[in-house]
Length: 373
Image 1 (cartoon, rainbow, N blue to C red):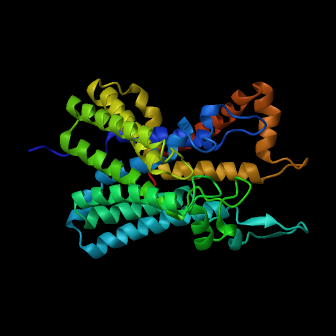
Image 2: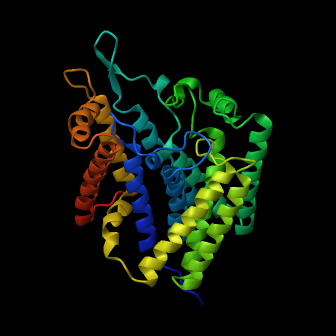
Image 3: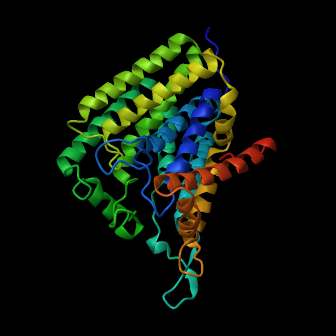
Protein backbone atom coordinates (compact mmCIF):
# COMPACT_ATOMS: atom_id res chain seq x y z
CA UNK A 1 0.00 0.00 0.00
CA UNK A 2 1.25 3.49 -0.83
CA UNK A 3 1.52 5.75 2.23
CA UNK A 4 0.26 9.30 1.92
CA UNK A 5 2.60 12.24 2.37
CA UNK A 6 2.21 14.35 5.56
CA UNK A 7 0.21 17.57 5.63
CA UNK A 8 3.25 19.89 5.53
CA UNK A 9 5.23 19.54 2.34
CA UNK A 10 8.44 21.50 1.82
CA UNK A 11 8.26 21.85 -1.97
CA UNK A 12 4.71 23.20 -1.65
CA UNK A 13 5.76 25.66 1.07
CA UNK A 14 8.59 26.87 -1.15
CA UNK A 15 6.36 27.24 -4.22
CA UNK A 16 3.79 29.13 -2.16
CA UNK A 17 6.53 31.31 -0.68
CA UNK A 18 8.05 32.07 -4.08
CA UNK A 19 4.61 33.06 -5.34
CA UNK A 20 3.94 35.48 -2.45
CA UNK A 21 7.44 36.91 -2.76
CA UNK A 22 7.11 37.57 -6.50
CA UNK A 23 3.54 38.86 -6.05
CA UNK A 24 4.73 41.55 -3.65
CA UNK A 25 7.48 42.56 -6.06
CA UNK A 26 5.33 42.85 -9.19
CA UNK A 27 2.41 44.52 -7.39
CA UNK A 28 4.55 47.28 -5.91
CA UNK A 29 6.90 48.57 -8.57
CA UNK A 30 8.15 52.02 -7.68
CA UNK A 31 6.75 55.10 -9.39
CA UNK A 32 8.74 57.70 -11.35
CA UNK A 33 10.00 55.10 -13.84
CA UNK A 34 8.71 52.41 -16.18
CA UNK A 35 9.41 48.97 -14.65
CA UNK A 36 11.33 46.22 -16.42
CA UNK A 37 9.11 44.42 -18.93
CA UNK A 38 9.01 41.04 -17.13
CA UNK A 39 7.61 42.79 -14.03
CA UNK A 40 4.56 44.08 -15.89
CA UNK A 41 1.48 42.22 -17.09
CA UNK A 42 1.00 41.64 -20.79
CA UNK A 43 -0.87 44.62 -22.20
CA UNK A 44 -3.58 42.31 -23.58
CA UNK A 45 -2.99 39.02 -25.43
CA UNK A 46 0.30 37.35 -24.58
CA UNK A 47 2.22 36.38 -21.48
CA UNK A 48 4.91 37.69 -19.14
CA UNK A 49 6.38 36.14 -15.96
CA UNK A 50 4.15 38.50 -13.94
CA UNK A 51 1.06 36.89 -15.48
CA UNK A 52 2.02 33.59 -13.82
CA UNK A 53 1.80 34.91 -10.24
CA UNK A 54 -1.96 34.94 -9.63
CA UNK A 55 -2.75 31.60 -11.33
CA UNK A 56 0.10 30.02 -9.36
CA UNK A 57 -1.51 31.30 -6.16
CA UNK A 58 -4.70 29.47 -7.17
CA UNK A 59 -2.69 26.38 -8.12
CA UNK A 60 -1.04 26.23 -4.67
CA UNK A 61 -4.44 26.73 -3.03
CA UNK A 62 -5.43 23.50 -4.76
CA UNK A 63 -2.15 21.84 -3.71
CA UNK A 64 -2.79 22.78 -0.09
CA UNK A 65 -6.33 21.38 -0.27
CA UNK A 66 -4.88 18.02 -1.25
CA UNK A 67 -2.92 17.99 2.02
CA UNK A 68 -5.75 19.26 4.24
CA UNK A 69 -9.14 18.13 2.93
CA UNK A 70 -8.62 14.58 4.16
CA UNK A 71 -9.75 15.98 7.54
CA UNK A 72 -13.22 16.43 6.06
CA UNK A 73 -13.64 12.71 5.44
CA UNK A 74 -14.71 11.98 9.02
CA UNK A 75 -16.89 15.09 9.39
CA UNK A 76 -20.64 15.36 8.77
CA UNK A 77 -21.75 17.41 5.77
CA UNK A 78 -23.07 20.25 7.91
CA UNK A 79 -19.68 20.75 9.57
CA UNK A 80 -17.83 20.58 6.26
CA UNK A 81 -20.15 23.15 4.69
CA UNK A 82 -19.70 25.50 7.63
CA UNK A 83 -15.91 25.26 7.42
CA UNK A 84 -15.91 25.93 3.66
CA UNK A 85 -18.40 28.78 4.03
CA UNK A 86 -16.51 30.37 6.94
CA UNK A 87 -13.18 30.31 5.11
CA UNK A 88 -14.76 31.68 1.93
CA UNK A 89 -16.48 34.57 3.71
CA UNK A 90 -13.39 35.55 5.72
CA UNK A 91 -11.07 35.62 2.69
CA UNK A 92 -13.67 37.42 0.56
CA UNK A 93 -14.29 40.08 3.23
CA UNK A 94 -10.56 40.62 3.76
CA UNK A 95 -10.19 41.30 0.04
CA UNK A 96 -13.19 43.64 0.03
CA UNK A 97 -11.96 45.57 3.07
CA UNK A 98 -8.54 45.96 1.43
CA UNK A 99 -10.19 47.86 -1.44
CA UNK A 100 -12.20 49.98 0.99
CA UNK A 101 -9.11 50.73 3.14
CA UNK A 102 -8.19 53.27 4.52
CA UNK A 103 -11.97 53.73 4.93
CA UNK A 104 -11.77 57.55 5.06
CA UNK A 105 -10.85 60.22 2.53
CA UNK A 106 -10.82 63.98 2.25
CA UNK A 107 -13.85 65.67 0.74
CA UNK A 108 -13.66 68.54 -1.75
CA UNK A 109 -13.99 70.91 1.22
CA UNK A 110 -10.95 69.36 2.90
CA UNK A 111 -12.76 67.56 5.70
CA UNK A 112 -12.41 63.84 6.42
CA UNK A 113 -15.38 61.61 5.65
CA UNK A 114 -16.15 57.90 5.39
CA UNK A 115 -15.23 56.47 1.99
CA UNK A 116 -18.47 55.49 0.23
CA UNK A 117 -19.16 51.78 -0.08
CA UNK A 118 -21.12 52.68 -3.21
CA UNK A 119 -17.81 53.16 -5.04
CA UNK A 120 -15.82 50.29 -3.52
CA UNK A 121 -14.60 47.51 -5.78
CA UNK A 122 -16.36 44.21 -5.02
CA UNK A 123 -14.21 41.60 -6.75
CA UNK A 124 -10.44 41.26 -6.74
CA UNK A 125 -7.55 38.90 -6.02
CA UNK A 126 -8.56 37.60 -2.59
CA UNK A 127 -12.22 37.56 -3.56
CA UNK A 128 -11.43 35.35 -6.54
CA UNK A 129 -9.31 33.06 -4.37
CA UNK A 130 -12.24 32.74 -1.94
CA UNK A 131 -14.78 31.96 -4.66
CA UNK A 132 -12.50 29.50 -6.45
CA UNK A 133 -11.70 27.73 -3.20
CA UNK A 134 -15.41 27.41 -2.37
CA UNK A 135 -16.40 26.05 -5.78
CA UNK A 136 -13.47 23.65 -5.98
CA UNK A 137 -13.95 22.40 -2.40
CA UNK A 138 -17.65 21.73 -2.94
CA UNK A 139 -17.00 19.90 -6.21
CA UNK A 140 -14.28 17.74 -4.68
CA UNK A 141 -16.41 16.96 -1.63
CA UNK A 142 -19.65 16.03 -3.38
CA UNK A 143 -18.64 14.81 -6.85
CA UNK A 144 -16.57 11.86 -7.98
CA UNK A 145 -13.08 12.49 -9.31
CA UNK A 146 -14.21 11.57 -12.80
CA UNK A 147 -17.14 13.99 -12.63
CA UNK A 148 -14.97 16.83 -11.29
CA UNK A 149 -12.51 16.42 -14.16
CA UNK A 150 -15.38 16.33 -16.66
CA UNK A 151 -16.85 19.51 -15.19
CA UNK A 152 -13.44 21.18 -15.44
CA UNK A 153 -13.23 20.35 -19.15
CA UNK A 154 -16.81 21.54 -19.70
CA UNK A 155 -16.00 24.85 -17.95
CA UNK A 156 -13.00 25.51 -20.20
CA UNK A 157 -14.82 24.60 -23.42
CA UNK A 158 -18.05 26.31 -22.32
CA UNK A 159 -16.23 29.54 -21.45
CA UNK A 160 -14.62 29.51 -24.90
CA UNK A 161 -18.00 29.01 -26.55
CA UNK A 162 -19.70 31.77 -24.52
CA UNK A 163 -16.90 34.25 -25.19
CA UNK A 164 -16.90 33.40 -28.89
CA UNK A 165 -20.65 33.74 -29.34
CA UNK A 166 -21.22 36.64 -26.93
CA UNK A 167 -18.69 39.12 -28.30
CA UNK A 168 -15.03 39.35 -29.25
CA UNK A 169 -11.74 39.08 -27.40
CA UNK A 170 -11.15 42.82 -26.94
CA UNK A 171 -11.25 44.62 -23.60
CA UNK A 172 -14.47 46.48 -24.39
CA UNK A 173 -16.14 43.91 -26.63
CA UNK A 174 -15.79 40.71 -24.61
CA UNK A 175 -18.95 39.16 -23.16
CA UNK A 176 -17.65 39.43 -19.60
CA UNK A 177 -17.86 43.23 -19.74
CA UNK A 178 -21.68 43.56 -19.92
CA UNK A 179 -22.07 40.71 -17.42
CA UNK A 180 -19.92 42.54 -14.86
CA UNK A 181 -21.65 45.87 -15.49
CA UNK A 182 -25.02 44.22 -14.99
CA UNK A 183 -24.14 42.20 -11.88
CA UNK A 184 -21.62 44.52 -10.20
CA UNK A 185 -22.24 48.00 -11.57
CA UNK A 186 -19.52 50.25 -12.99
CA UNK A 187 -18.89 51.93 -9.63
CA UNK A 188 -17.85 48.58 -8.13
CA UNK A 189 -15.43 47.61 -10.90
CA UNK A 190 -11.68 48.10 -11.38
CA UNK A 191 -10.75 51.36 -13.13
CA UNK A 192 -7.01 50.92 -13.60
CA UNK A 193 -7.48 50.84 -17.37
CA UNK A 194 -9.08 54.31 -17.35
CA UNK A 195 -12.62 52.96 -17.46
CA UNK A 196 -14.70 50.27 -15.75
CA UNK A 197 -13.20 46.86 -16.58
CA UNK A 198 -12.97 44.02 -14.07
CA UNK A 199 -10.00 41.65 -14.68
CA UNK A 200 -11.30 39.46 -11.82
CA UNK A 201 -14.81 39.47 -13.25
CA UNK A 202 -17.75 37.19 -12.59
CA UNK A 203 -17.58 35.16 -15.79
CA UNK A 204 -13.79 34.73 -15.84
CA UNK A 205 -13.89 33.37 -12.28
CA UNK A 206 -15.28 30.10 -13.66
CA UNK A 207 -12.21 29.01 -15.67
CA UNK A 208 -9.95 30.12 -12.81
CA UNK A 209 -11.55 27.38 -10.69
CA UNK A 210 -9.79 24.89 -12.97
CA UNK A 211 -6.40 26.24 -11.80
CA UNK A 212 -7.38 25.18 -8.28
CA UNK A 213 -8.66 21.79 -9.45
CA UNK A 214 -5.48 20.98 -11.37
CA UNK A 215 -3.43 22.08 -8.36
CA UNK A 216 -5.52 19.79 -6.14
CA UNK A 217 -5.10 16.70 -8.31
CA UNK A 218 -1.38 17.41 -8.70
CA UNK A 219 -1.15 17.50 -4.89
CA UNK A 220 -3.14 14.27 -4.56
CA UNK A 221 -0.89 12.58 -7.08
CA UNK A 222 2.18 13.60 -5.08
CA UNK A 223 0.60 12.41 -1.82
CA UNK A 224 -0.15 8.99 -3.31
CA UNK A 225 3.00 8.46 -5.37
CA UNK A 226 5.61 10.06 -3.11
CA UNK A 227 8.86 11.78 -4.08
CA UNK A 228 10.37 9.51 -6.68
CA UNK A 229 11.63 10.22 -10.18
CA UNK A 230 8.50 8.66 -11.69
CA UNK A 231 6.37 11.28 -9.95
CA UNK A 232 8.56 14.08 -11.24
CA UNK A 233 8.58 12.76 -14.80
CA UNK A 234 4.78 12.55 -14.85
CA UNK A 235 4.41 16.07 -13.52
CA UNK A 236 6.80 17.35 -16.18
CA UNK A 237 5.10 15.37 -18.92
CA UNK A 238 1.59 16.54 -18.05
CA UNK A 239 2.88 20.10 -17.72
CA UNK A 240 4.44 19.95 -21.18
CA UNK A 241 1.23 18.48 -22.66
CA UNK A 242 -0.94 21.24 -21.15
CA UNK A 243 1.41 23.95 -22.46
CA UNK A 244 1.40 22.37 -25.92
CA UNK A 245 -2.41 22.31 -26.01
CA UNK A 246 -2.47 25.94 -24.85
CA UNK A 247 0.03 26.94 -27.53
CA UNK A 248 -2.16 25.62 -30.33
CA UNK A 249 -5.38 26.83 -28.69
CA UNK A 250 -3.87 30.33 -28.52
CA UNK A 251 -4.56 30.89 -32.22
CA UNK A 252 -8.30 30.38 -31.59
CA UNK A 253 -8.69 31.57 -28.00
CA UNK A 254 -5.66 33.75 -27.18
CA UNK A 255 -3.69 33.40 -23.97
CA UNK A 256 -4.94 36.39 -21.99
CA UNK A 257 -4.63 36.92 -18.24
CA UNK A 258 -7.21 39.73 -18.00
CA UNK A 259 -9.85 37.57 -19.70
CA UNK A 260 -8.49 34.44 -17.96
CA UNK A 261 -8.98 32.49 -21.15
CA UNK A 262 -9.06 28.70 -21.20
CA UNK A 263 -5.72 28.62 -23.03
CA UNK A 264 -4.29 30.82 -20.25
CA UNK A 265 -5.50 28.28 -17.66
CA UNK A 266 -3.76 25.38 -19.39
CA UNK A 267 -0.59 27.35 -20.09
CA UNK A 268 -0.18 28.53 -16.49
CA UNK A 269 -1.06 25.15 -14.99
CA UNK A 270 1.46 23.53 -17.32
CA UNK A 271 4.16 25.93 -16.15
CA UNK A 272 3.20 25.35 -12.52
CA UNK A 273 3.54 21.60 -12.95
CA UNK A 274 6.99 22.07 -14.48
CA UNK A 275 8.05 24.35 -11.62
CA UNK A 276 6.63 22.05 -8.94
CA UNK A 277 8.29 19.01 -10.49
CA UNK A 278 11.61 20.86 -10.63
CA UNK A 279 11.30 21.93 -6.99
CA UNK A 280 10.59 18.35 -5.89
CA UNK A 281 13.64 17.15 -7.83
CA UNK A 282 15.93 19.77 -6.25
CA UNK A 283 14.53 19.60 -2.72
CA UNK A 284 13.50 15.96 -2.29
CA UNK A 285 15.63 13.99 -4.74
CA UNK A 286 18.85 16.02 -4.63
CA UNK A 287 18.20 17.08 -1.02
CA UNK A 288 19.36 20.66 -1.66
CA UNK A 289 17.40 22.55 0.98
CA UNK A 290 19.71 25.21 2.36
CA UNK A 291 18.26 27.89 0.06
CA UNK A 292 14.62 27.17 0.88
CA UNK A 293 14.49 28.91 4.29
CA UNK A 294 13.98 32.34 2.72
CA UNK A 295 10.85 31.30 0.83
CA UNK A 296 9.52 29.17 3.68
CA UNK A 297 9.00 32.36 5.67
CA UNK A 298 6.52 33.57 3.04
CA UNK A 299 5.02 30.11 2.59
CA UNK A 300 4.12 29.67 6.26
CA UNK A 301 2.18 32.95 6.57
CA UNK A 302 1.11 33.71 2.98
CA UNK A 303 -2.21 35.43 3.62
CA UNK A 304 -0.94 37.64 6.44
CA UNK A 305 2.18 38.73 4.55
CA UNK A 306 0.17 39.43 1.39
CA UNK A 307 -2.25 41.61 3.37
CA UNK A 308 0.63 43.35 5.14
CA UNK A 309 2.24 44.25 1.80
CA UNK A 310 -1.06 45.60 0.49
CA UNK A 311 -1.67 47.66 3.64
CA UNK A 312 1.80 49.20 3.58
CA UNK A 313 1.58 49.95 -0.15
CA UNK A 314 -1.88 51.50 0.23
CA UNK A 315 -0.67 53.76 3.03
CA UNK A 316 2.36 54.82 0.99
CA UNK A 317 0.10 55.73 -1.93
CA UNK A 318 -2.46 57.45 0.33
CA UNK A 319 -0.36 59.57 2.69
CA UNK A 320 0.63 62.91 1.16
CA UNK A 321 3.43 65.21 2.30
CA UNK A 322 3.77 68.99 2.24
CA UNK A 323 4.32 69.36 -1.52
CA UNK A 324 1.23 67.27 -2.35
CA UNK A 325 3.21 64.21 -3.41
CA UNK A 326 2.25 60.80 -2.10
CA UNK A 327 4.76 59.30 0.28
CA UNK A 328 5.43 56.51 -2.21
CA UNK A 329 6.28 58.90 -5.03
CA UNK A 330 8.42 61.05 -2.75
CA UNK A 331 10.44 58.02 -1.59
CA UNK A 332 10.92 56.80 -5.14
CA UNK A 333 11.72 60.19 -6.64
CA UNK A 334 13.98 61.44 -3.84
CA UNK A 335 15.83 58.21 -3.01
CA UNK A 336 15.50 55.20 -5.30
CA UNK A 337 15.49 57.13 -8.59
CA UNK A 338 18.49 59.17 -7.47
CA UNK A 339 20.29 56.06 -6.28
CA UNK A 340 19.66 54.06 -9.47
CA UNK A 341 17.58 55.95 -12.06
CA UNK A 342 15.10 54.12 -14.28
CA UNK A 343 13.59 50.65 -13.96
CA UNK A 344 16.31 49.45 -11.58
CA UNK A 345 15.27 52.08 -9.05
CA UNK A 346 11.67 50.96 -9.45
CA UNK A 347 12.71 47.36 -8.80
CA UNK A 348 14.77 48.30 -5.73
CA UNK A 349 11.74 49.96 -4.18
CA UNK A 350 9.65 46.81 -4.60
CA UNK A 351 12.49 44.61 -3.32
CA UNK A 352 12.77 46.81 -0.23
CA UNK A 353 9.06 46.45 0.49
CA UNK A 354 9.28 42.71 -0.08
CA UNK A 355 12.21 42.39 2.35
CA UNK A 356 10.36 44.46 4.94
CA UNK A 357 7.41 42.06 4.74
CA UNK A 358 9.80 39.10 4.86
CA UNK A 359 11.37 40.46 8.05
CA UNK A 360 7.95 40.58 9.71
CA UNK A 361 7.25 37.03 8.50
CA UNK A 362 10.65 35.87 9.82
CA UNK A 363 9.87 37.41 13.23
CA UNK A 364 6.50 35.63 13.28
CA UNK A 365 8.04 32.31 12.25
CA UNK A 366 10.66 32.54 15.00
CA UNK A 367 7.87 32.95 17.55
CA UNK A 368 5.73 30.23 15.93
CA UNK A 369 2.99 32.72 15.05
CA UNK A 370 1.00 31.46 12.08
CA UNK A 371 -2.20 33.09 10.85
CA UNK A 372 -4.67 30.52 9.55
CA UNK A 373 -8.12 31.03 8.08
